[in-house]
Length: 69
Image (cartoon, rainbow, N blue to C red; front, side):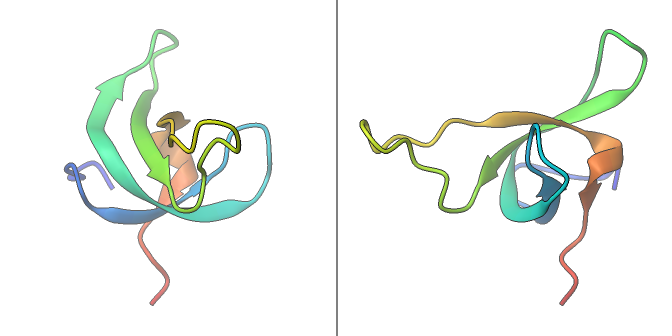
């Protein structure tokens, strides 16, 4: 999963949950302060109720997988 690029479809653990959700890579892998790597994901159907905007979320690379299909 280290060869990810912007626009790739993935399943990633949504922050503060234990569930995988579909999203797409907004920014490729980068190093985290703790030594791991993370990617920025735009999750599908994750619009803010009041503004309608979708906010990208940082997810550790180890919590990202290719689509199961």
